[in-house]
Image 1 (cartoon, one colour):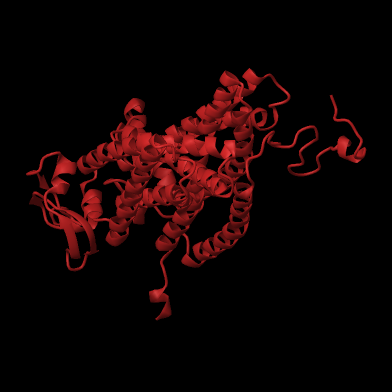
Image 2 (cartoon, rainbow, N blue to C red; image 1 turned 60 degrees about the vertical axis):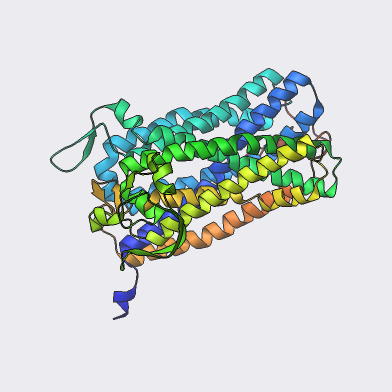
Amino acid sequence: MLADHLPSALDLARSQFAFTVVWHFLFPAFTIGLASFLAVLEAFWLTTGRAVYLDSYRYWLKIFAVAFAMGVVSGLVMSYQFGTNWSVFSDKTAPVLGPLLGYEVLTAFFLEAGFLGVMLFGLERVGPRLHFLATCLVAVGTLISAFWILSANSWMQTPTGYVLDANGHFAPQDWWAVVFNPSFPFRFAHTVTAAYLTTAMIVGAVAAWHLLRDRSNPRARLMFSMAMWMAAIVAPVQLVLGDLHGTNTYHHQPAKVAAMEGHFDSERRAPSILFGWPDAQAETTRWAIGIPGLASLYLAHDLNAEVRGLKSMPRDTWPTNLPLVFWAFRVMVGIGFLMIALGVTSLYLRWNGRLYTSRWLHRCAVAMGPSGLIAVTAGWIVTESGRQPFTVYGLLRTADSVSPIAAPAVAASLAAFAVVYFVVFGAGIWFLLHLFNQPPRPHEAGLPTGQPVRTAGITPAPALAAGPNAQPAE
């Protein structure tokens, strides 16, 4: 029958959450780094008094406002899915995850909301030092938000500090162990660094695009220089953090690492498989091309160490989509090496005085613009698909977490999400690209001031109603 070949409610619920979380994470991955970049630009402006820093700040402030708004909107619908599609998961984990997500709202969201208006519209209304404080607090708020969200996600990957009651509910026993669970420090450092690199790639691409048009533009030169410094310094650091995170994952989630590496058999001097196709049915990686011993070296830091394969673990604990985990990991790592290559090349050309004149470097930087977004998406695919078939690793299965809801209902909401997201966020991304295409100019205008901003509902606008010669209210 046709119904036997249609996706189940579980598959549709997973697809819906994957769709919305991928869209959502694109924006925080950009704004976390961009908020810190804005704080650095404003600090340099206050320290040096050079207008080029202020112009660059105002240029990226407009982009930050749009990206931040889309990040907030895209994140709202995710919380509703916990009640509609994942009510069993919410019921069982609420005593642990509820407070963590609540702390994110109370600390990060309120901090960002409280000072975002001053940051966006207060540059000419408050003192420069107070405005700089607002920028810094918004940047700190984005990091605090990442702290709590990644703590909650890491607890689902490596749960500690809990007890299970008679009904299978997770109750906190040690909040310190819950928040600072074994994988959290590594995931937090790795993710935040990835956000900084994502911002560096976008800033570098936009600056390179304008250098290709006018290599003498001082604002584009400044942006490109700062982005390439970030790539040259932080990309190699990310490689080290990724190695530490991978070692931690190997100890706590061996099935995930075996899927990432395409290892079915446990063996000493395990190879690092560069290319291949994991076949769960045949229990082998077909057409494997690898480097002998390399996996043992970077996973166990011992060339002769034995690395566990999937066959040494129960079949029902294997990730449910091995090729997806395997190839997403390679996309992430491959892009990381390209970022390192871009940073090293920029150092060489900087040393030779050709950083702003090398057109081929600028073209490469433009091509690398979306690389950070692709890499963080691939990284989250590895993290979340590798955790399957569990929502709380080793303790609560995904199949036991879904709501008792019919597949057609989930399919209808998924279709609605797809239409709305592609229309709304497609338009938002188009507008961001429009802003990127505008060259950074001297005395950058920034966001409009001096008149009310209409956001929703009926907003009094006496200055607008009085005509074009009206003076803004004091």
